[in-house]
Image (cartoon, rainbow, N blue to C red):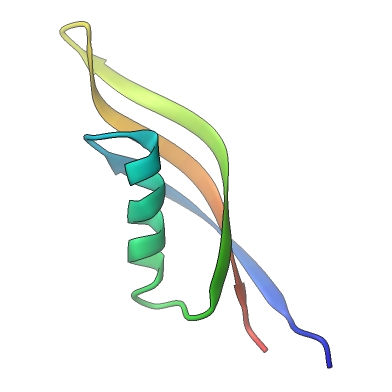
Length: 67
């Protein structure tokens, strides 16, 4: 029996770290998606103000099993 895996692309951010931004992406996606299997972080970006990073942003792909 085979499984169908679907992939969605998401953007998430955090004030703490890129790892926290990835966790936020999973947390939000899991509110409407079940069976999440992996996250692939494509891009890392940061917003800077007064020479300090104020937001960590990621662009990621989340995969989950449909059936």
